[in-house]
Image (cartoon, rainbow, N blue to C red; front, top):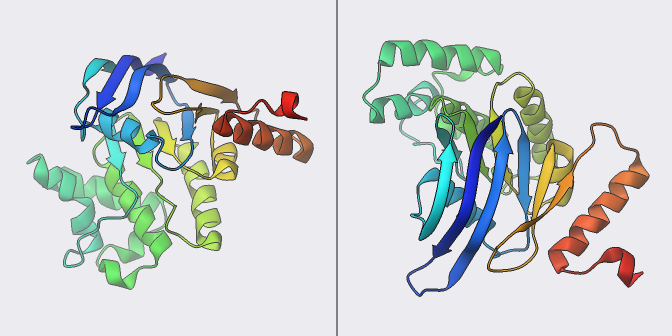
Amino acid sequence: MKVLEVKNLHFYYDNNKPILNDLSFNVKKREFVSIVGGSGCGKSTIIKVLAGIEKITQGDIKVDNSVSYMPQSDTLFPWRTILDNILLPIEIKKGDLKKGKEKALSLLERFNLIDYWKSYPKELSGGMKQRISFIRTLMNEGELLLLDEPFSALDAITREDLQNWLLNSFSTLEKSIIFITHDIDEAIFLSNRILVCTKSPISNFKEFLIPKNMDSQYRLQLKKDIVSAIKGVNFYEEN
């Protein structure tokens, strides 16, 4: 079952420079899809278009249920407690704050952060802030989560910790994820499927399915193939 289907998507900025050119792809239910590509190729534009932050020029986007967007930075308000930051989507939608608080506390308990609900962002580490930002994203109740390079600003150790945390969290959530990253190892570790931007403007992807179990040799070859796809070079022909 598809939770997202994109057909013939076009996107131009005001200068009429094409970023997305007749792009089509889909995401299945409970699938973790990473989009990788070179810097400035337009991969973050894709996720902003899907989130409704940027308006498409032409094309069709069909989403089952709704989407929730998590930007690169945690964007937590320093004057609000962790609980109040998490409740922000409920406040914006003028939803039921009592039920929202119950859900927020339940998610904090589930992700082992309940002790920090009264804390302020300055009291938390970078990794903890990103966990809180992820929980706030879940408050939107979208079936499709759009994560735009959420770990890019973290140090290597914290990043690895968050990758494991996200993978374990994903296995318990009935969600689908589109994850933007420039880190190929991260994409291989997290994903069921990787979509590689091979040129700009983006008109199609080169797709790689990621097996659940792979040895180090297979993983190394897979990484080489993805790098070659990004560079637009056929690895096997070159060697």
